[in-house]
Length: 267
Length: 80
Image (cartoon, rainbow over all chains, first blue to last red; front, side):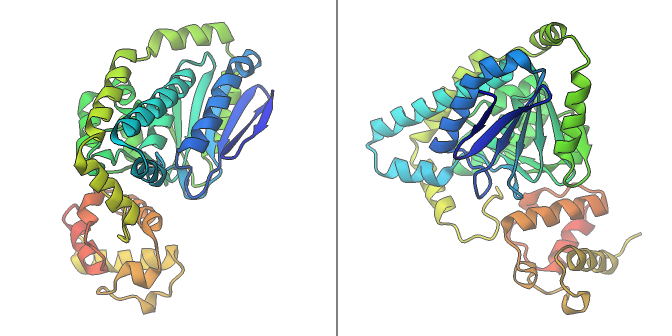
């Protein structure tokens, strides 16, 4: 299937490039519906990549690339489940999203995240699965999870540690601050910074460049330079589930969901 | 050296242009959330534009509890 229109995203193949477009209001929060669509994409990716050389992930939402996990859904679901069911459901969700993230991370095609605006939490983690991040100059990156008493759960820390120095990981993780595209480029996170509204355009011209190279060679180079940190990823799920059982997390989620704070995203 | 007054004026000018609010209606003591009618995502947008304009990094936790232009200018001034 060369094209797909789901509830939260769509994809198509254009001139040898798979274009995955996130489109769930308000800002592509990743909940059960997005996960199901991403799983469909991961399944389709196996056949799509046979005829493609690149994958671009972008967002149709003006607010940004992705604001992360759907915390409202997470909180509401946790309220109607017993403790053991809550943890089992969480573990299942994390296991499934990790399979999707790992599939994108390991895809033999060269992958590009074309991001703008809010690229927070799970959205940042999705971008980190890609080989290149091309950022609109107004993009902001953040791991705000500590404010909820959690750590990023979609593979963000292992992938950021793989790609950047540990000090950068600690800065973003422990302060929960957001950084802009210029800063992200200066630390090596972002490959290119575009003018406002031009990230996807820049990603497409980069994908056109990638087409000039032999696919097998590009794929071998990627496998060589981009190992997937499976052990750390599994460990991350364990830490996340352990932390999730603490009362402080439920309180943090409730505070976020019920917040009237004009800056609920700030740590 | 940039003074606090100059910094404040530049912030007011930038906010006026970005959010299409007449400059003469903005004062340093205004609550920028109310006056500009912005939400949290637009506030992040403003933060990015301020960082670009002043060529600084402004950690967002420093803006917690800040809602008036004057205090915002003081936070920026301390990083110039």
